[in-house]
Image 1: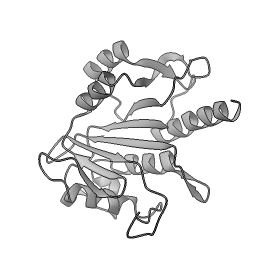
Image 2: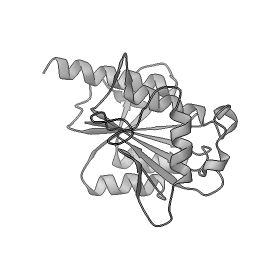
Image 3: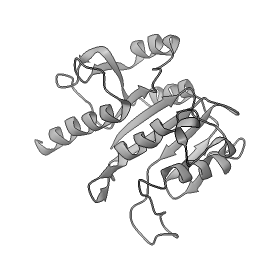
Image 4: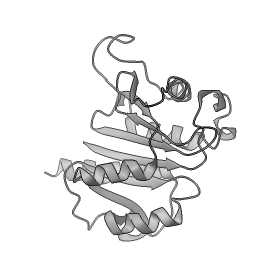
Length: 203
């Protein structure tokens, strides 16, 4: 299993702040929507080896942690929901609407939401001795890094991770770089997937 944490300081934290027709205007929700697609979608297939954590810090009720690990087996509408590239915004909107205070709630099979901040999530994972890697231009080339079992990769939105949090994370997580150029978050996810897929194929 490989996991990704995507942090957005502007993405909405309530369903009524989501404009499905124009996610760009909804706190740049378009970027995490594309992150969902990059994490889970292959050609004619949904990945079963990935999990995504969306950490939203925008208006009106931050923070929110949305955890996605879609169920792919069983009957649609009973055991799983229908997930495609066109309905991701609607799923995120419904998840935000169905948040309940003080509860980590499974809104759909494999889709949870709770009120938890980015640093709290990361610290919880560190306490579990998980292997965390932060995507950073100054990090070691990912092709040279020993990626340990069940890795978790952290990346930020179009503004990047807040400087204070970034400095702290560099001390507790392994900084890795995907190369000399700066890529969009979705491209970064695809490159990390490709690197891990190649390593698994050669095992």
